[in-house]
Length: 191
Image 1 (cartoon, rainbow, N blue to C red):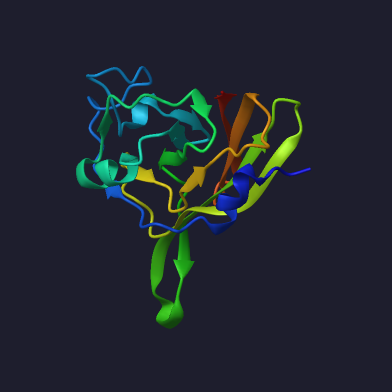
Image 2: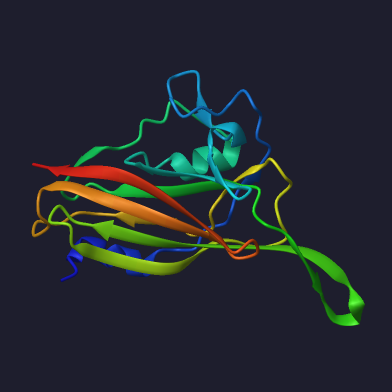
């Protein structure tokens, strides 16, 4: 049975995708005060595409990234109380590229990345399956630049949602390379 915690996901807004230059000194998985999201070398990589998935209660994550191309000192959310919005952000770099021939024999480069979002509740039951969300489509970003997925979301646990540890799983699909990457984070719902 699906819980109402994710009814907001059905209405997730598409947001403009930020494409900003990544500098090798900005990205680290440790995320302490001197490190930031925005670097390819700290992203998990599979078959050429790189990605990071973040959950945070900081609603400024998207505007901060859009302004600066990096987020310093972000603390990933690992515990949350009910009725607290949790913002989901998927960062990626180096999607597969293919040539597409348009009318008048014009050839352009194109990328196509989608992702699926799954939430598994503390009992191990699938609470949400939200598939084929927009990651990146169209003109590919410059190789090495970290981009923010077009689809972003907000989770919000409600009173009937059970307390305990949830698994939030993102399956990234590079539809050009025919490659999938699984990213997962744990989130504990507390009183």
